[in-house]
Structure formats: C-alpha cells, structure tokens
Image 1 (cartoon, rainbow, N blue to C red):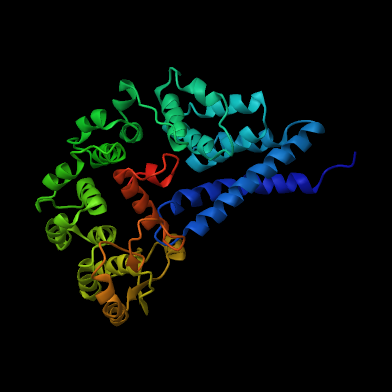
Image 2 (spheres, helix red, strand yellow):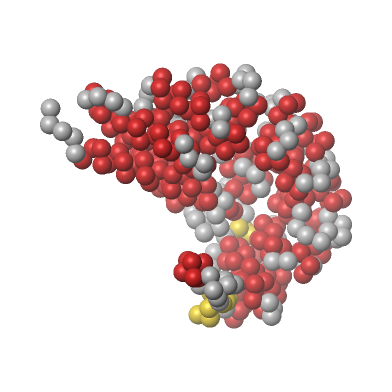
Amino acid sequence: MAALTCIPDILAEHAEELPFDLSQRAMMRRSPRHRWTDLQRLDRRIAARIDGLRIGGRIGGRIGGDASLVLAEPLLQARDRHDLAAGMLIALASDSRQGLAAIDQAARAGDIGSEAAADALSLWPGEPPDLVAAWLTDADPLVRLAALEVRDRRGSNCEPDAQLLSLEAPGSRWRALRLASPERAVAALDDEDPSIREAALVACLRGRWGGLLDHCRASCDGSQAAVTPELAILALLAQPSDDAVLSACLSDAALGSQRFGLAATWARPQVGALLLEGIGGGDPEQAIAAAEAFSRLMTVDIESDVVLADSVPANDAFESAFASDRFLPDGARARSCWKSNEAALSRCGRIICGEGDPGVPAPHWDLMSRAEARLRAAWNGDADPRDEDARLSV
C-alpha cells in the first residue's frame, strides 16, 4: 500500500487547531460581540475536526498504530485546560480501550484535569462513554464532579454529595455548588467569598428558590462598595418594583465601570440616561465601559476615531506589541441613537439589542444577551432542561 501523505498532515492540523477552537468557544459563550451563528459555525468546525480525527485515526490504525492516540499524547500531558480537553477528545476519537484509559488518567490531574474532562465529554457528539457512569461513584471527588457536570450539561440533574460541597479549593467548590439544589445551596449565601456566593445564587436561580429575589434585595441596600453577585442577580431578574434600588445602586460611581455592564443586563428604559451620562463623563475608562454597554443594549457602533492609549508600561515591548487600540466613544452619535428610539423603547419592559424583549432569543442577539435571556427563562420555569445557556453561571 502506498504511504499516506495527506491524511497524517490533515490529522496533525486538526490536533493542532482543536485546543484553540475550544478556547475560542469558552470565550464566546457569553460574548457581547458574537452571535448565535458565530457559535454554531465554531461548533460545526469542532465537530468536523472530531469526525476527521475519528475517520483518519481508523485509517491509520489499519496500517499500524492509531494516529489519534499518537496525536493526543502530548496534549494529555499539558497543563492547559483547553489543551487537555482537546487531548481527551482526540483520545476518545480513537474508539479504543487505550483511549479511554488515557482519558481516565488525565481526568485525575487535579482541578484542571477534572475541568477538562467535563468540557471534553460534554462536547463529544452522541452519547458519552460508559466511563462517565463509572466516574459517578469514583473515590476521587474531582472525578465525580466532572461526571456530574457532564450529566448536567447534557440535561440530567445530579445532586453533588456533601464531600463535593465542602471541597477546600474555591474553584472546585464553586463548580459543585452550581449543581446543588437550593435547599443545600442556601447555606453558602452568606459565604465571605463572592465567587462561592455567586455559585450558590446560580443554584438557587436554577432551582427557582422562592427567597432568591428578596435575599438579593436585602443585600443591595446601597451600602456596597463594589459590584456584588447579589446585585448582578437582581439586575438579571429585576421586577419593575426593583427600579428604584437598581437605579440608585448603578448610579453610584463608587461601583466603578462594572456598573455599566450591569445596567445593560438590567436593560430597563431608564438605563439609557445612565449610560449616556457615563459616555459623556470625563473619565475615559468609564466612558469606554459605558459605550460598550450602550452598544450591547442598542446594537450600534458608537466608537469615534479618537484612540485611547493602552495603559502598557513604555518599557514593556512585548505587551506593547500585542496591545490593541481602544477608541473613545462618539457621544453625539450615542445621544442621537437614543433620541431616535427613546419614545418606542420607553414602553418596553426590558430592552434587548435595540428592541423590546420578545421573550424568545432571536438569532441576531449577542451571546451574552442570549445567555441572560435563557437564565431568566430558567427562573420563570420556561427553559428546556437541555438548554446549555440556562445552565451557565451569570
């Protein structure tokens, strides 16, 4: 048989590009700059790479050795989450006992191995391997956690055990808490770590805990010196009766530029004035943050031609080489856009991408707005349990 030349090169290209595709997907999931079609396009590319590795690996196996396992090996030794996840997908593409053994070993590489395993086996097309079911009773708590996350992302609820909910590492405990029932998550709502409270709040949102909004309202009394998870949840799920407290909180300059992003999440008609004030203020960083929120709210580009120099040390040549230009907003364009739409939007309960919230995400929405809408649907009991957006952290 003639030596294969093209196929090994194609397989190597798939293996080389797959980690980057996975990192792009993680970044894109809640991106205000990408649309549903962008994510679909990327998912098709990832699926095509996996198909190519499955087919090409089998061809290679018939002439001696599995090409997929050879390509997976260096990635499975990596300490980067996306490299590891790519290595696991490639090993799974080998459709062999050796591949499953390699995945099982890599999944035991601490937090990063557990996270990568959850990513890879959640993205795998079709049913996950029997390995996931075996992991549910594994002695290693992080391996059990990966299995629970895979099942959760595929629409099956699994309650984490007490050991998982008391893991010492904050990142691991955060992952476990997000899967918990509200009855078990409530205990973490008073934790000093904001990330732990965020995970508990998400669990309460998913479980539609009746005390969630009142808890957030009590926490947002205007005394906070920074954006809190409770304020973020209140902005996401706010009722008209919450307008006064949110308006007061988000108008407080002490909360910094993050308040503008929350204003776009709150998305009531009165946020227009708040964002325009930030755009026209004298602080360039605040103006850019307000402009980004305004662009998401209205789906309009309001960048000017005025470049703001990045805050990169002058003697840091490497950082300077990769620094991207940031543009100050065009305040006049923003005011004109708002004036043209204010009358119509003032009658909307919530503004999403320049229009009233129709209740169902539209294809042209940015992925951040889409994910937020799905979370609200989960809170209202309208979300499909297989909907990935509704299972993401806010």
